[in-house]
Length: 295
Length: 159
Image 1 (tube, rainbow over the protein chains, first blue to last red):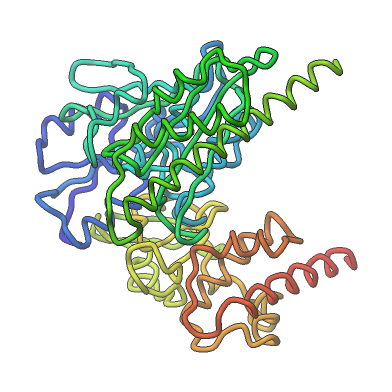
Image 2 (image 1 turned 135 degrees about the vertical axis):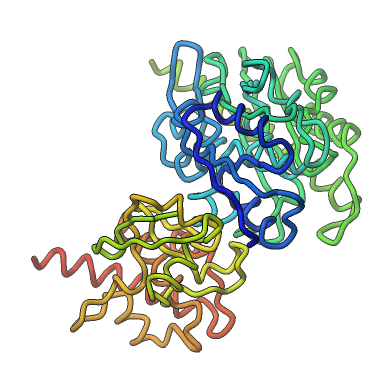
């Protein structure tokens, strides 16, 4: 690796100020699982690293009155072990578990994964179906937005220059919402998703309420399948309805041909995975209803 | 920059350039060449060490970030007169051939058994997913980890 300055800022604001002062030669460093590799092989014009991984504003996982706050610098390993995540966002844990392998999950952060913004980012669909929001801090202060708005294109986020992803918030009303995540890769370990999918919904009797479907590796960014969601909303749950939603979800995607899989194979996967995550979410919602009747 | 850390129970320090990875510091500054440089991009796992209780790819971690941390490398597993149960079982079952993946395999396996002494085959495979072996295949390795877990549990029970 080429000689590099390494700066550990004292606060998020200080990190932003240092990045702004150093300009394009400085880069924020999170877990380093992508960046350190890039620096070894294609360092571009980066000559300084601003290590934001230990900043208290970006660290920690805690439940508040608003919901679950996951600091952007929480590692996948930390998310997978956190009792609140395990209890209330098990599919975020499941999605985290499919990222890389143990060693990379202990370094890699959820925020770093989102900022890298590859279409196949596994955490994205699981967060999107829970209506997650993100907070950002930059030269103009803090702002907050739905996570969907954060993704702009392949490796392109909405972050302004010198702006940093600070937190991910899962709102209170979706904590514990019946949800399911499914990733299909060529291997179980260290594989990128050919397609990943997440679903979430509530059941009011037999009626589907607040359905959500999110898909990854099927378009330039992770996407919500909003037409398929609209088709399900308020309808009586049935196998035929879930089939139809899965069919519609495919029409909302633009998968590509690449060396991992063909477009047509990905389209089949989208349909199958969408069907499965919806079916599993319904099963969980039914189990909840039964438990509710028992109490 | 001065990096001070604890390695295998001993306080160590070295002056390294900021871009130095923990792996290079261990190998080139501290003389601990057990952790290997394989792919250097975090895929192969032969550089695996334990930092503050969790296993990491030391080729992806800057040395500065390990400052103040407690690091365990393969050199910290055996004592002068006794191999770690994992090492004994790897030897007994022929789980290694060329041995290049060994330091990483053993450290990942140790990290698993430290928190989960009696893992299932699935859990072992999951724990070793970031460690690649190109010689023997994984069957003997998985058997060795499971046997070592049983051996350690029995030793615990006999204490």
